[in-house]
Image 1 (cartoon, rainbow, N blue to C red):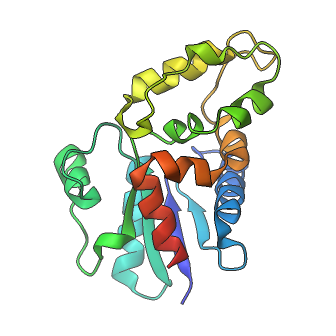
Image 2 (cartoon, rainbow, N blue to C red):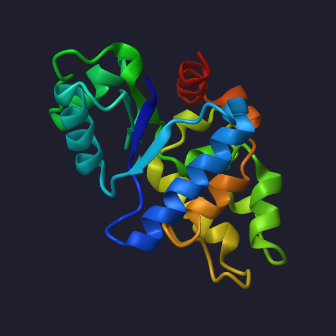
Length: 196
């Protein structure tokens, strides 16, 4: 059976959802999953991703569903389901396993910080890398700090600063997953689960 990956991202626009799927596809192919890719379902908001995942689990006939959403904060428990229950009140649906829930900690953009070359290549001249958070533990950096750092670092470029949605999926597609999983344990857990 095939895997369906319900991801947060893509908003309400058909074009943006297409860019979301493309960005994740490129990222996952670079992670060694070419030829055995999950079907990527861009769900828009976090709640839509969770609800779509729950529906897929309940139906039982759409392959193996997986959920991937931003943590939106630090993950204290070590268990993604416990984090989502505590933060959002989202219960693990009956029949779902631990390895079907994955988090981008604390936000997807934290993954970009692991690959400064990809950021420099995307934004080009005027990119001020010194404005990015310097903590080597990417998953410990607060969401607001990650987003503010990207905005400040890209402010002087011809892209006019970082814009979530407009830039995020193109950057994701150019990011080296090996660099991300080397510094982000939840990203490694996610990629290892897909590889298995």
